[in-house]
Image 1 (cartoon, rainbow, N blue to C red):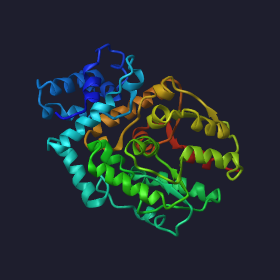
Image 2: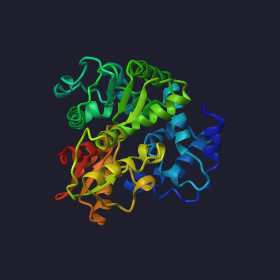
Image 3: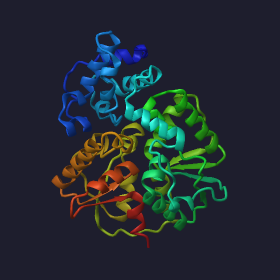
Amino acid sequence: MNITEKAKKIADSCRFCWMCRHVCPVGNATGQERNTARARALAVSLVSRGAEKIDEIIDNVYECTLCGACTNNCVTGWDPKVFIQEVKTDAVLNGVIPAYVNDMLDKYEKTGNVYGESVKEEIKVLLNKEKTDILFFAGSDAIYKSPESVITAANLLKKAGVNFTIDGNVIDSGNAMWFLTGKTEETLTAAKNAAAEMNGYKTVIVYDPVDLKLIRHEYKEWGIEVTATVKGFNEYLKELIESGKLKVKNGGKEYTLQDNYAYARDLDDETTAREIIAKVGVNKEMLLKGKEANVAGNLIMNEYMPDVQTRIARDRWVNAANMGCRTIVTENPAEYEMLKKTAPEGYEVKTVERIVTENLI
């Protein structure tokens, strides 16, 4: 197995101390020891030492959400995501990726997205309009799997008087290829193409925090420059409210934020969405919040392990119910769709832009 010494060191250095064992959303959903960071570390270490073959462990590698819960709780400061992504790249280069990943890569080659979806008619009317200074980068998950989110966000921006473009030429940040293949040439090509298009705008508003994390972190590591000013959607929405371009009232309703891992852990932002909620309602917290929040679902993984992703979302509703939290607010289209799919009777999920829209003056 051809992975870096850094990745090998991370896998080999796992103490098997159990500190991260209880935080893996997949492990909690399946109840299987293999679905823990320490088990994956052991498996990768065995392969790197020649005691096991990569095709024997590769399915388990793809059962990681990359949410970083294990990294956040690692007492020795290691990041298992490093070896997870490098093993994926090695598997791609050696032709031992699972059949379901190959299928998604084929869909990507044919349609431009790993879901094999075409753009919905209600989204097509928003694409490729006259170019402005501001690009609203909705991202692949939202465009192809959560058009409701795109439409609600776009309508809110229009109400604020924002003149923006949703560019059909820049939907893919490279995140899906990064998730499925790691740092491959295909991932870099997608990222470079996205950056080139973004650089034709003055400001880029990134809707999905998973895309935002890739642009702010991985792009820089890969030497891909984005010259436009890049802002997260929450940040921009807060600016619109505070500037008075969006006038809101506080309706007094309780909202519970589902912290997205990309915002809370990778981008170190646990506050912006809560500040928005405080302007239109009341923050009601779950116990597992901020950097400790559990992920509520992954749409790419839902393509090949839907039962597990459904259980993960249902587990999050259990967390909410235990604290009497009846309305969850999401920051990410994947978690919105998974929580909407699994919402118990009497509970509801809304996006940040939806609760703002419902409290406009």
